[in-house]
Length: 296
Image 1: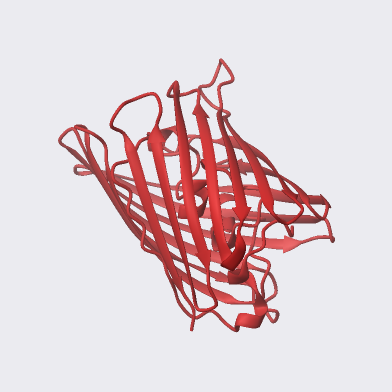
Image 2: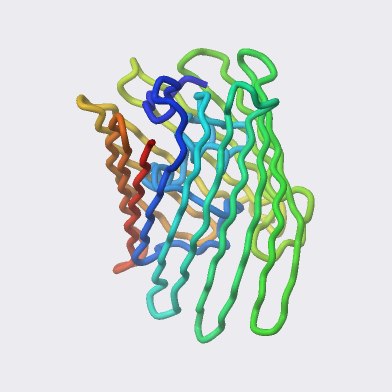
């Protein structure tokens, strides 16, 4: 569980009272319905969607409820997305999350809120998602966690409400090697937005210079051909606290491939991340993502 050198997770920075994340995606180059994952952060986007087994900071619990930051701080983050879907419409998204790994806390926990407004082919869809994740190290090499989500979807005048949840595990057999397994949306197999899925992932760090991450997402429903979404991400650590990311994703459900790139700078008072994503299977579909984390 010590794969990523991230100063934003260091306890010697003192408590983190505010982390402001500004994310812009223009335009979106993948279908949200291809994923069981509801929210992605900029760092994960730059890694091709990978990171369930790697310590990628405050984004960790969003990908895997067992994957909490290796720090003793309190974090607050806000997120804003704007996505263009070619001529089909656009999606705006905003929300926030709180991550608490205070030593006095009984266990690490995260609370997140996300609101999406979709305008697709003249149809307006509004979604609200609340999620709480709780994780706990069981031994020096194993952590487990679970999440519960309340999801509300309104299509025109019709409104539906669902509860769902999942389980996650993070296994650290060696200092530089980590594996993850996540069962997502397992409580309600009929949620409209997200299908139940099994996520498997691995991550390895080479000499504290380069981390390699590989993730696979497999739907458990309406998937007779056993298709999946496969992500591969590379993160390299450069002098002066810079990070470079490259990634790729093969989406068998959409029959499309994507490649990604990202940059990060992790300073003593704030952190910047940028990600770019392009659909290699369709011309003119790409995305930009930015985030800014500020410490007080």
